Image 1 (cartoon, one colour):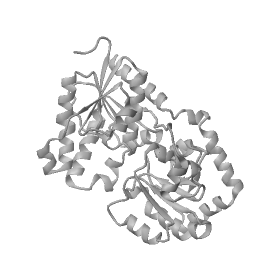
Image 2: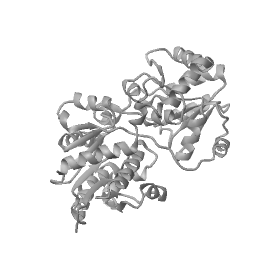
Image 3: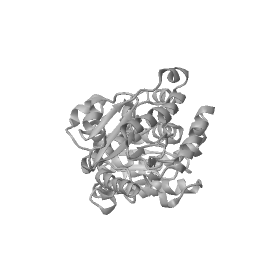
Image 4: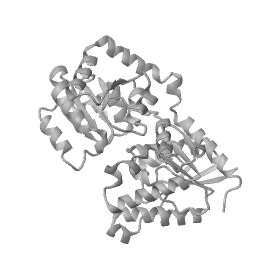
Length: 388
């Protein structure tokens, strides 16, 4: 039975089990804020596995998490097939049993929602346009084709940046009136022990460059390692900290560690919010040579902690950071990129100016756009429009 005057929102909570990915953090922060702000919402998050206790605490008591496992047989045959069947079958049954009024998938997925209105968040178009994602296997290509069809059929799409929205529309088959920009956000809070974190990784304040993010090919981490090892470290003496859960199944990290055998490169593995805040806060700079992004949440995290960003010159980076970042042209040679980085680090006037811009960002009109509370309000407004 539906509670009087309450709207039931069903959320695909698959990424609750991957809380330190971009989509995982998006899922936790957006829906925690959405539930806290709207007492007339009942938020149900269905997930294939029980999420960590820390995730449940972050979501708060207003979000009900329900575990509905994947089918063991499908999982034994193929994990991708099990995922598809879970999205179509298990979630579809859950929505009907719960009697939800609206379904929201925080990533492009399949949905068996029937005639229930569907909202889908599309972070980028890469699974549909980049061969490294689209063509991993025949099953992967089929899944991505079907999620593209599902996205076109969704009642509303949320895009995390204007750039990403433009890329979605450029694919064709989408109605511009059904795509809304609702930004990612960054809000660090809670206790932290700066000295303990730095000791754990053997780091000194201001003596390292920090990369945080994924290790897909487009992230360009191998080139970052090469530029750092050959042209930055020998001159500046900094270390390079590679943050993130895993460093590829290929030889990227093995090669990086051979190059950095003297300890110049540090691998962190998973980092919680407190660790992240400390590592951003005491880095000389955040650095990323990524070739494509739908938003790049670590860039926003860096600026929010007053860490000067050195990043590739992408339209979406300029949309997010404006003048608060130092941009690198990836068409330049590695040696030229290295010279640019070294020049900034050695020119203290230019470097301090960049740091000042990062410190002013949070209180600027541009910085205030990136708030989970604001994003939750925008999302709730879209729900009401669909359900009115």
